[in-house]
Length: 62
Ligand SMILES: [Zn+2]
Image (cartoon, rainbow, N blue to C red; front, side, top):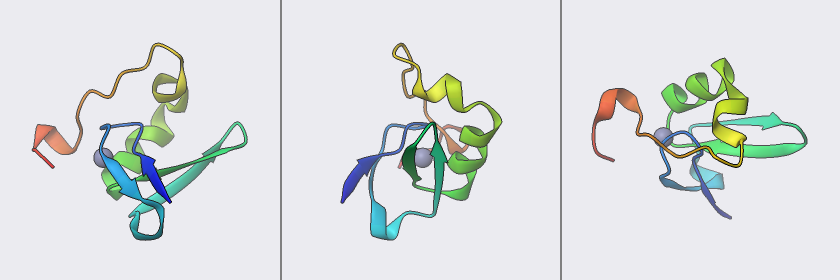
């Protein structure tokens, strides 16, 4: 399944994700453990209706 990393906005194949977290009944997949850790710090920041992916991993390009 192709999903969107909510932290950086990158598309992530769920079977190849580096991490996953469940929040409010939904499972999110991440391109890296860094993104997963960012999500865990403030999941509501990345799941609210107004959330916009803002880049991750120190701003490097994926
Ligand atoms: Zn990411």
